[in-house]
Length: 274
Length: 258
Image (cartoon, rainbow over all chains, first blue to last red):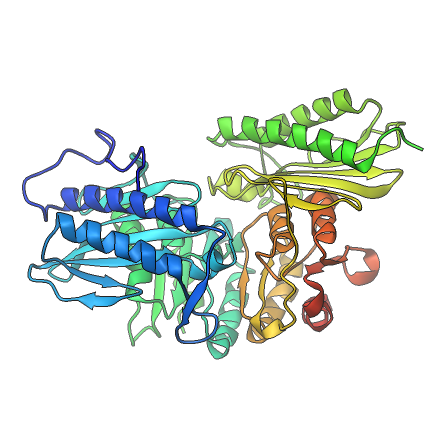
C-alpha cells in the first residue's frame, strides 16, 4: 500500500537505535505498519462482507480483517524475523526470539461492518511477556497514537498526557458492551451507576481507540469487561505509558479492564468493580 | 408562497455548512471554555459562536429575510417564509475534549414545515443532505435505512441528558434495554447519530431532552432515507425516536420516558 506516511516522519518518535528489539525501534515499526494497515482498511470501508461468524452472530469477521492482518503479519515478520505474532484472526505463530507482536487488524469490527467510521488498527510489541511499545491508528481520521516504554506517548508525533481531572463529575467515561446478551444486562446496571456520577458516557465501539484517547486526555476513563488480549494490548500500554492508571482483567476483578486519569481512578473503580 | 424550493434551501445549507466545517477544522485546537449554559457540564467554546456567526451571515446573504434559530444567539424573525435551525457545532463536549466526532447541522423550514437538512461530519469529511420529497444522500449518493426487522440484532445509538434527574431515569432502563438489542453506542453527536441511522449504519437512535437544533437537519435526512421518525413533544415525554421502520414499535416502549 503506497502511502505518504508509511515512513516514520523525521524526529517524530526518536532516532533509530541499535537492535531490532529496542523499544524505540519497535515503536517506529509499529507506527509504520499501523499506518500502512490503516490505509488498507480505509480502502475497504463500505465493502465489508461477513466471511465467518465467531462466538455469536454479532461477533463478526470480515474479509478486510483477514487482508489487513495478512499485511501486518508479513510486514512485521519481514522486519523482525522469528518474532511470534498473536492476532485476532489467525491465532498465534510460534516465534524463536523473545519478541511477540499482539495485533488487532481492525478493532471495531461491528462498526466496520456497519460502515461506522470509528475503527482502528492496534499493534503491540511484547518482550519477555511485557509490552514495551505500541501503536493505535485511527483508520478514518488518520491519527496515529504510538509509544515506547520510558519514552512517552505521541499523537502524530506530539507528546500527549492523560487528563488532570480529579472529579468523576467532570469526567467523560467510555465503555463498551459485550457480544453476549446475558452479560450486557449486568453491564447496563454498572453503566447505570456511573451515568449519574460522571460528566457523560461514550461508547464509540473501538476499545483500542478508547484507550488511546484516555492516553491523550480526550477521555478521562475507559472500562470494559471480557476484552481479549489483542483488543487492549497496545491501547492499555499507551494509556499506562502516558501516565494513566491501568488495571488489567483477571479472575479476581471479574475480568475488568479499567484505564483512568489518576485523579479519578479510585472513585470510578468503586462504581464499576463488582 | 415562498420563492424558494426545498432543493434551493438544501443547496444554500450545503454551501454554508461545508465552509463552516472548514473554519472549524482550521481551528482544530479548541479555543477554550468561555461560557457555560444550563449546567456546568454544558460547555460552549468560542469556536461554536464564531461558526454560528459565520453561518447566520452566510444564510442571510444567500436567502435574504430568513428567520434563524440557533444554539448560540437569539432568534431572528424574517419575512421570506424560510426558516433556518442551526447547530454550528453538534458534539460540543467532544470538541472540547478534542474527540474528533463533531458535526455542523443546518435544517431549513419552508412556511414552518421541515424542508431540507444538511449535516457535515467535520473530521470524518462526509456530507449528508436531504430535501423534502427529494431523498437523502451521503456525498451525493442515495442512502437508506437498514431495513432490519429484528430488534434483538439491532445496533442502536443514544445520548444522555445533561440533567442529572433525567439521567437517573435513563440509567434505570439501560439494563433491560441492553438485553433486548445487539449493542448500543453513544458517540456524542445527535446530528451524526441521525445521519448514521439514515445511512444504515445504525438501526435506530433515541434520546430525550434534545433541543430543536440538535435534530432539525438530521431528522429530515433520516425521514427521507426511509426512517420512522417521532419528534419530541411535551406529549411524548420529549422523546426523539428515529429507527428503521421494522423495529420502531417494539423499541418504543423500551425507551419512552416513564
